[in-house]
Length: 265
Image 1 (cartoon, rainbow, N blue to C red):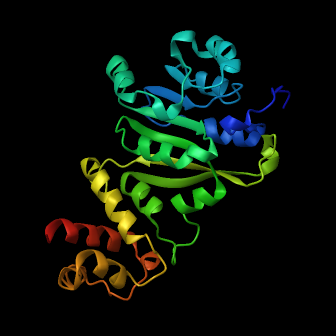
Image 2 (image 1 turned 180 degrees about the vertical axis):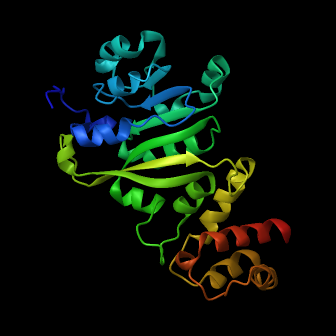
């Protein structure tokens, strides 16, 4: 590409995407029924022109003031928010704009990719997401292997979204090249979530308990938290062995155990 990049700001975790193939995979096709696009951390507007071509309201959230002028020219100054995405007021934004089907796109800063993802998960108007992660994190959200790969991040995201791999991005796809591989994931919000959105906080707390020591026998971990009698009741109700390791659970088993906690108090 002929894109000219400024010096990357390390404090913002900047690595500018420079691969036509990866850019194409991230920015298309447009998810059905989308009524607005939000891009997090657009930087020097590598993805933004491709997103703006859909002629939908396109908003960007960018901390680095060096890029504001260029972004203003693409999406309009009223649609550029110069602030930290972690501090963005989604409630105010949605009250003012009334969008119901947002496509969120981002080459996420790796140091805040997980907290940002968990915040997006809780916003029901965000129906689709195309997000770049450090590959190690992407593999926790969507493991390549099904066996012994269950974890809290996968269970939480899967409860609200259908997940898919979009495209792999090697270090050479960026300027400057990061020291890690990257992976883009696609998220499509479930019409019927596996866990009601209103229960996400409780479900996340449950997952943190279950997967705190994911390679140890689950019965022993939960006995310390619940006590012997209650632990046995919950495992009997679900038919799960007390000797199973958390990482070996299936999604159905995770959900059944969570529901047993809700039903047996």
